Image (cartoon, rainbow, N blue to C red):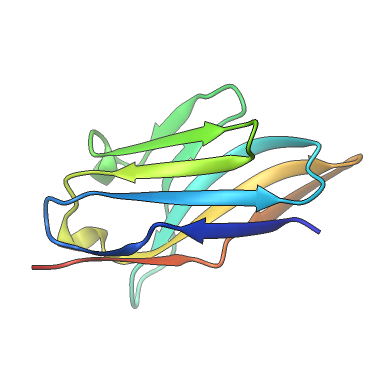
Length: 119
């Protein structure tokens, strides 16, 4: 059984920073894709940033230059550094991973962490 634990959310004023973490535990043979998504009230969940097993990253346009996704494969942990936060970044942020357990390819979601940007 693989579990994801997210942390790092909170309340911050516009222009501030937060760092989200996503730690995967369990019998993971290899961690492939890691991604961060967010969902604001009344809106669909949207992809924020992704990082592949080779470290290639992608970002949605609205966060480019402000957010940085990273991973520590030795710890099976992913991070999302969020700088210059704006009120429109307010949402629940979810971590999503694709991984291998034994000979099986699986996916998992974190429980979500609230990020609120307000003055």
